[in-house]
Amino acid sequence: MSDSNAAQGKTPGEQKEIIWEVVSQAAGLLPAQIMAGRLQSEGIPARAWQEGAGRATGLVVGLLGTGYVEVPQEYVAQAQQILAEELDPNEYWDEEE
Image (tube, rainbow, N blue to C red; front, top):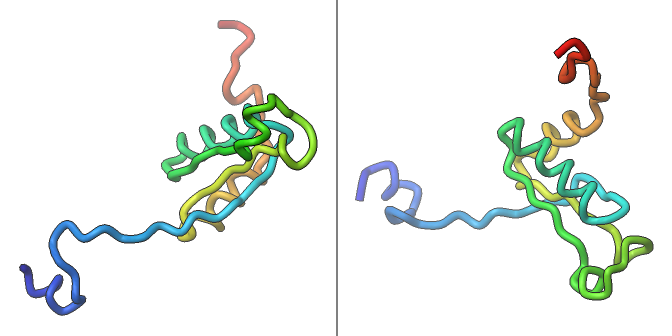
């Protein structure tokens, strides 16, 4: 065991618990997956989910139809900032191409 691990009381390969926080909600799983993908493209670990009962019954409205986007706690502020930015479609699409 290295001295830094011993000083921190950790063993090699020890897993750290990740606390996930919801940073956005959407009307359905698909929009939540798109937002999670945007965060992932910026290097932020993200996941999208929907209540199991909503997915099983195919609900896309109401509480069971809500899609959620989560990121680890240490990325919350950065994720919220990215999701708050307006995307300029002209930045990504060139009509002449």
